[in-house]
Length: 457
Image (cartoon, rainbow, N blue to C red; front, side, top):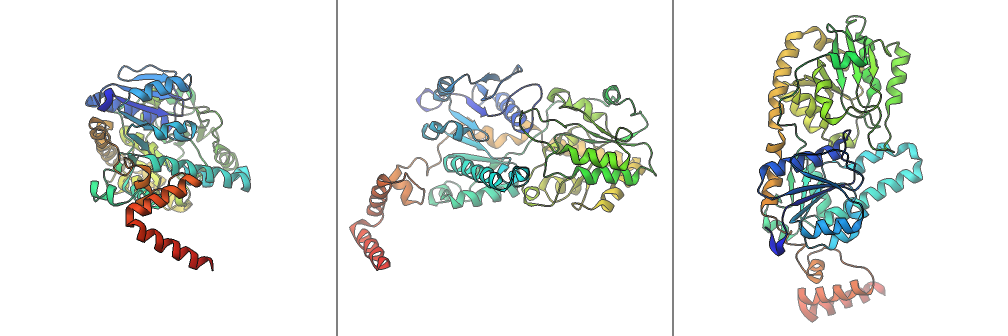
């Protein structure tokens, strides 16, 4: 039981929590389950601002029918964890006296640099601007920020520093800033992955046989990925390996309105003569609880992306499902997780856009069954490192003893004095005067006023 009679954790996601889910909703559900299993923070509720279409034995799932219901849940929670633009949708949450955890595992402003390109330059600029404003609001209010990797942590520390959140109070709380930003990667299920059974693929794609070597692309196909080069690499290798197959699982996003970039891959398959012969597209989106059966039916997991800033700070969550199912990985390099996988012998990385290197990696993987066996075993072992209960420990520790960030507990005058922005207009001017008085008394105010007058001459 927290101060003021509050207890438990409320997780709020803007995405639907349903049978078919993308990364943010999956993460919200699994974080909630891990906290419930940990037990120290009390009951856990996951609220979707969109819809709920599933039941869970460990967590209370609910959809917000209106602001009143959300306010009721917030008023009793000891911790609130948010994703996406929740504070933009409900700005009153900023002023709630409850510790707020911001889940920033997805640097979506970097994604939109590519994803919004098709909207035209004016709208693209507006979309990226709004993403940055949303992140500014979240990070300015966060009592704790979650990220997926050490590289992301560096990104968010820079962002927080620009907002004034890296200050003597947060530094003195923990000189490494671990009480402000902590790494909680995406995880893998605690349960053992399903056994290999190729019939799940064969029911949808009868052309796939038990003797085929199947590459599988789990998850969506977005603008920052490069599925076209993968299709062309498969076509390049196919004459030597006629039993090679490639399956794309996520061609239509489960959230309405989210664009995918499947057309380029499909066009490449048509152009190379591999469509529905060696390259297959699953129409729709595989239900979350069934994805393990689809993945385990394959021989290798693949992911290829372009070379841009999104890659540098990404954490390719689909790769974790490959590890869970013991699949060797072939991936474009450049992100933390892909490099970790290659370093552990669980797969290989290739340079972005390098058709020859990718075709060579696929050729080796198809030829060398022993390599697939060794890499698959390494993948399964590495997957255990990312078990949800293990990666969630820093969050569970915080939720067991939640506290406000010390700089956010200051009154508005002291917040200005340490460099945190306050309100605008006349009240802001008066607050700055008061902050100056606290910092250096009337002498400081006189010196500042004199300096300003000299600049105006």
